[in-house]
Length: 420
Image 1 (tube, rainbow, N blue to C red):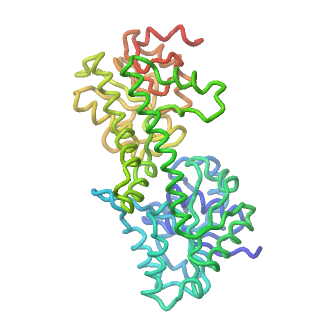
Image 2 (cartoon, rainbow, N blue to C red):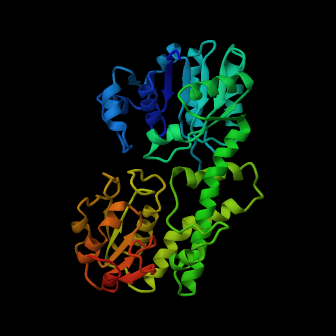
């Protein structure tokens, strides 16, 4: 395979791991950053976030096969252009295409014939068609003849990108057959299995995958609320009904959020406003912090109590706090006038409050402890958590890491459930 020049526009948590992966595959990769500070950081070989295996590869290839800049001129010398740009939602939960539009404004004057453009980040339905229409309206190129365009969504788990890129089949949604063929060849020549379809099916497939998981979490969380209202524990019930059952089973509850799961459902709702399942799931998952606070208030007056939140990332073993429900818990605790301490083994800073990075220090004097993220460190150090708080400290363990099938309990009640 002749190695091509590739431009990756957007070097965040989707684009940067992809750029590093492509450099490792032998391509010359140009990463276009939104800010000069981030480009400078990357050109020094410094990873701005956690990603397994990425740091040594960045150091290996930077300024050799990997180049970062805020300049779009690399588009002129690139054979393939991959857009990894976010599509947030506004205050009315409508998709905002500002990042894509700004990119197109900068990129379109630099396009040349026979380039392949790939949209990689999750987008609302028909976004790829919108990009096609803008290119054809504002340049001399005909998409599918002069320029080629496809939607090829990332399907990896954040923090494990470099491994999963090759393991998970790549959906290829070309705007036409020629675009589909070129995009499929690009991925298949790297040994990645490809699944070819039309562009709308590719866009919907990515959204459906995310929403299926989100709805499954909402079902588990609603079952948890019901079980708690009967003074029963969802973990005990779930393990019981799943044991030996061959026709599927229940998933476990938890604080389910993140930048994709939070917003992607609204991309579908905007196109289908009379369907309620996604909206209901959003209500259930987003209301869970308030349910936790309600259950805590039934047991303890939170005013003036030192309350430690363990875990700020939206899921385990990463440092990404975007749309994390930990901060919704924090906000609710502030209204209760609690004294809040934050801890996370990976998150370095939070703009509104210092993070205590020493676990023992964060627990010292705590009267309430909420395990918000199921980091492995908390599972491995559960004895340390108990040993560093008073026996009357309330523990909120929605993840059941202590295996005692209670969502809220006093620390002194848990010692018999595990070996120290």
